[in-house]
Length: 107
Ligand SMILES: [Zn+2]
Image 1 (cartoon, protein in one colour):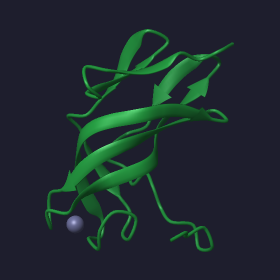
Image 2 (image 1 turned 135 degrees about the horizontal axis):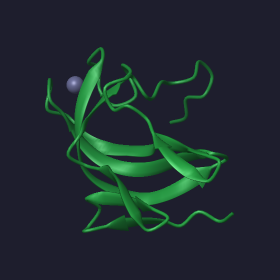
Image 3 (image 1 turned 90 degrees about the horizontal axis):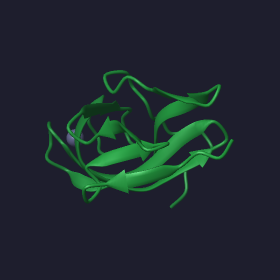
């Protein structure tokens, strides 16, 4: 079943199958090094772009700012949830969502 992914309201929401599922108002906890040097980094998202499905995982680009050090940057392919039996199951933004794989770093 194809999955309809869109960003709405200038990137304020990710819509999955015409239902608003993920909002930028959340603070996402990210592992050290993927966004800034904070451990962990609490990143307030400001906007989404390029939502996509990678296998069953819904990933999106996002612009965010670290609440600790003030770094403002773009996140590529942030996992925000996964598809289970055609339904979207969001990840918990308070859990550490995104880490750098040991040999997965690219410059
Ligand atoms: Zn930081």
